[in-house]
Image 1: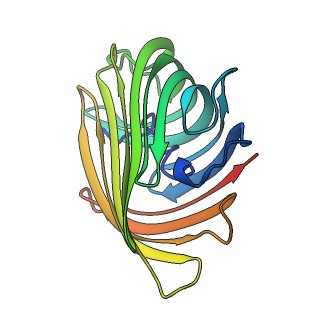
Image 2 (image 1 turned 135 degrees about the horizontal axis):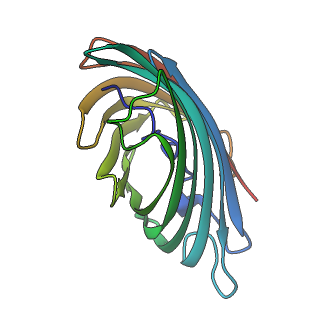
Image 3 (image 1 turned 180 degrees about the vertical axis):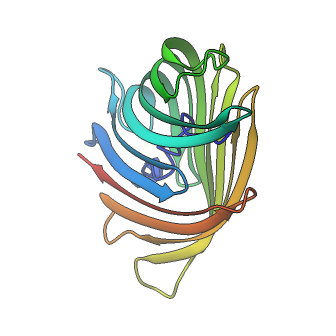
Length: 225
């Protein structure tokens, strides 16, 4: 089966070490096209008594997309809508940042034709666990994101390494991805370009391939407020 419910929707979350004390949150959005397609939009908001990058925060994300997979009876096309609401514990500094979270996920999947053997069909609630972070090392930066849906046993992991290009706002590097559940496992890798003209705004774009032979292009943007 090809994945679609595990979306790389948090791959371009702001490096919280760039946030200042007055910053309360960050909005992020993006999408991916290829053999599968998906898009996402979300907000991270610091809770009272905390600030962006330190203390407690709430992250809400909505995503949608489509994918297909093969059964003995033929190809099945899937479309999904997904929402996550996660409580985060944040820590950050000049070294980078790290967030650890847990919360609830609801996914609604429509299959055509119907596939009674697929537990994703219809609406399903799940407990989701997440972790994301970034570490600065001079001109180099290492970051990643991971999530795990407990009931569906669904995982998504993305890691990246980038280096500053000259003295300007551009960074270049590579990324690796893996996602799956009880029915499939898939990996991928690509090259990425990051543009951050200020500490408040960041753009990223990546192009790469999957181990099943498919290619993908992804874009994302973050904005601190």
